[in-house]
Image (tube, rainbow, N blue to C red; front, side):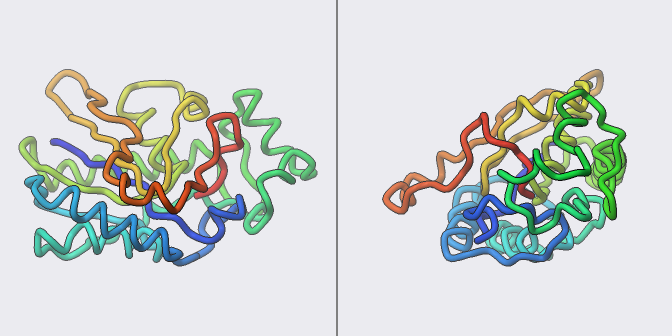
Length: 220
C-alpha cells in the first residue's frame, strides 16, 4: 500500500502557537487555500480512498483531497490528534511552566505519561497505528490511500511504520498541509517523502506561520 499521510491545513490556533489537540478548530483562510492546493497537487495520483480524523480541520482538508477523485471521506476516530486535556488552549510558550510537567517528561523520554484529562503519547500511537492497520487491510497491497490527520498523530504513525522509538517524533517536522509518503512493502516499510510543501509555492507571498524545528511541536 502507498499512503499519503497529510497534516491538515492551518488554523488560527496554529498561528497563535496554541495547543488545540482535540479542540475542534476550523481552518483559517490560509488553511482553506492550502487544502485546495493539496487537492490540485494530488489530483493525478491514483488515490482510491481518503480517510480523516473526525476533527473539522482534517475533514475540510480531506474533502479537498477527495473531490478530484469523486471519493467520499471516511472518518476514523483513531486518526484524531492527541487529547491534551488540561493543556488544550494554552500557548506553547507556557507549557514548560505548567505544573503537569508534560514537556519535561517527554524530553526525558517518558512517552507513557498521561496528560491530566487527556491521554499519553503511547496511547495515541497505539490507536493511530491500529487505524492505519485497519485501513491497510481494507486497501489491500496495491491500494493508494490518503490519510488526513494531525501533527503528533502523523509523527506517531511514521515512527510506528519505520520501527523507530516514539521519542523520535521530536526529530520529525510536519508542517500544516504537508504531505509525507509511506510505502508498505512485504518485508519492510519505506518513507518515500517527508513534510513536502512544494505545492504551496503560490502561497509564498502570504508568508509562513509554521514553527521552526526547535519550537515545541505540540500544536495538532
